[in-house]
Length: 334
Image (spheres, rainbow, N blue to C red):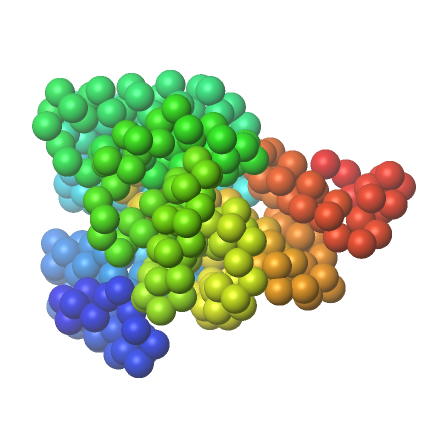
């Protein structure tokens, strides 16, 4: 539990948080009790897993899901399933991810509305990954309605964050306008939500308020998805100074997580980390680095079938010198 207390991580305690988590896992494995191991794995996932490499974190999630299923821990399984499914997608295993989502859906049918809202939320993430923004939003509303009937509290936060993700994925910040007031009302003025609030304010033209929040972002110890949304806000506001601060923080926290999803219990798509690194590099004037990042993002999106993010990455590359000629020659195909 000490590893969770140390989060969100300041640079000085990153290694300490990881050490506590690894020690806890080592003790749990040595004891040989599956219930204890499952308990510890959940704490590691809630905290230190955000500091591990993408592959290490995926293995933690996989073990939780498999152990929860074997122990018939339905609630744990339903909370881990979305994270496991999105991890499979970002590794190019879409068929396995779809099969897992279907299995989670069957399990959820035996649960209460407290857990069932997570399934349409997961399907909304899948739909957005495939480029179906309208379908994604319909599923989001379905998830919110289920959660409202059950009186569960996390769902509105995730609904609001996912609405931001939809507008980002389609490359149209104005799409958030019709939901902006509700999104801002659902996201409390807490520093964890500051990147999302900053982006929404910038997207609806309240740039002075957004800029004031943006100045706070580089000094706050966000986990990776907060930094990535901060980068999106930085892009909207064209703030070079903040971009220069965010770029090394994202590189440091990326740790092999090249395609990123939001909160683990109810995933929403943030997309390829290299695309946002490219946008930050462009802001600070490093065109060569931006090109490399955008090309990495295009290759990743093509490999795993992330359609809307492929389009965003190609469009970003076109803004770099010489990209239009390469696109015309067919060497980089959308």
